[in-house]
Amino acid sequence: MSHNTAVMVEGRRLSLTNLDKVLYPETGTTKAEVLQYFTAVGPLMVPLLAGRPVTRKRWPDGTSATPFFQKNVDVSTPDWVDRRTMTHSSKTITYPIVDDLAALVYFAQAGSLEFHVPQWRFGAGGVPMDPDRLVIDLDPGPGVTLDECAEVALRVRDRLADSGLGALPVTSGSKGIHLYAGIGEGWTAARCVEFAKKIAVELERETPKSVISKMTRAERAGRVFVDWSQNSASKTTVSPYSLRGTAIPNVAAPRTWDELTRPGLRQLDFREVLDRMAAGGEQPGIPPAPEPERAGSSRRSRAAAGDLAPMLASAVTVEDFASRADPEVWALEPKLDGIRALVHFDHDVDSGVSTVRLVSRSGSDLTPGYPELLAVPEGLHGHSGVVDGEIVVLGDDGAPSFGRLQQRMGLTKPRDVRAAAEKNPVLLEIFDVLQLDGTSLRAKVYRDRRRVLDAIRLDEDEPWRVLPLAPADLGEALESSRTARMEGLVAKRWDSTYRAGRSASWLKLKHFLDLEVVVGGWQQGEGRRSGGIGSLLLGVPERAGGLRYVGKVGTGFSDAALTRLAGLLADASADSSPFGDAVPAVDARAAHWVRPEIVGEVRYSELTGDGRLRHPSWRGLRPDKSPDQVAGLG
Image (cartoon, rainbow, N blue to C red):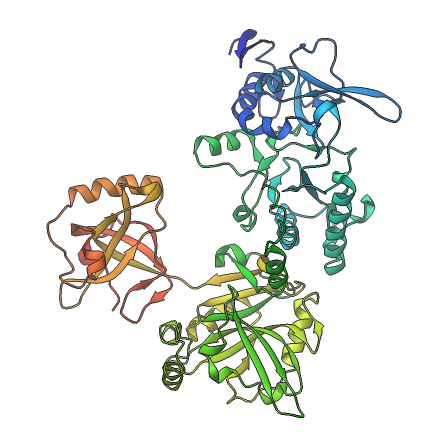
């Protein structure tokens, strides 16, 4: 852009001035670059501003100068900019409404870097409506990192999910994180404030050393302030995608929840946001409000049943978790390869009658399939409750064997169940307790629930067991679980309450192995990959010669990797299988064969009983290796 210029924006003529003025001295970012940014993000930002009164924070002379807030439209504001008038206790203000790109660019041209809006919109006749979204502002106090703020954000997300609300995390561009949730009818501003404050108070009660819900600034050092007050009808919050008047041009940037689980979280600047948009893919948005209940629907009954649905762990890599593996914060358990079950039990001492019901993660009744678990063990005689655990079958090596457990799954006829139970008896490994003798323990922290578990005395020959904790040291725990051939570890916050659904307070760390492989064929993809590569058929060299088929991999590919592979596969096309007749017919029918000369690497969890890779993921090509240098499986 030139120094001054006139442009057309969506049919509106705008005069852009002083385009070479530096607005961010530290980075040299000019007004022209700021306007280009707002033009690029406008299609995403304007829908979040439209219909709301906009308060602008302006830096016409750049961020090294003193800014000022402006609410009113001034006399120079073009007539085509929409506006609404509100009477406050002491004054009347005419606010601009930024409902198109031209208005956004106009105000950015006037030095507006930050756009602040409330959580409600104007309705018909200019009357303020009830809020359509809820916001919780997480403000890290002195000495608190953004990673620690993210941990609190994940806990807030779990609370919102318990009420059926999804949430969008936005790194604020300044210090903290904003969480937005779409809400439906019946949510007044007062209700939003009360709801958000309840979450804040609960989190402070659970972890008073790391969370604060009170406004007192002097008490925030070392803690995250969970600001519930932004939901007041009179309050505003900086809009997602807005620039910030910080030293560098940071953005209030929508993020993914996966990003918040990774260490090293930081604020993003405007170039990084533009790069993300250029890379393609759908940008995260504020989740819609949950659908209202309809008369006669079963939603309420499902929600009631969900109150006793299992708590689920979020996946994280060992590398990502290692930096926060504090034994004072996290407990470690072996991760078992079995079937998750909530076990409802009752034992009457007088009659000696046991009642046991096994419920799967999806709510299915597992009880008929595992008769050896239906007697309440002696250590729980006279008690009733609900425990959480894993149904497993042990292999010859003493480790849970999912292959053997599969021989028990899906059986319904009593005769078949009995025969399978004799061959592959199951165990119940208990790792949590939700209720005991009529008292719910879900609101208790995990440390207290674990004390209850440790007080249960079960004989070694009982099919019910209490799963022991892994060593507190992460390195020792990983080594012991590998030695015991476990699937990995589950890390649980000592201060976590038991909440249904996926949670960042429980993390699963799986063991994975890396393997060099030779590509022997490929299959076409479907959906987004239709017509291209869907999966690769893999092998490893046999000692006696030839290529042993170890299965196929269909995940872990980047677009660049698929493009490169397409060329290599075309050049290596062959008429016959390099695996002989070892490929199952269902895979062979759709296969395109190639000469066994392309070497790559995959990551997998284990080998199945028939020698196939379990949970393989493509890691990349190994052009440094020839097929005869691939070590194989031994």
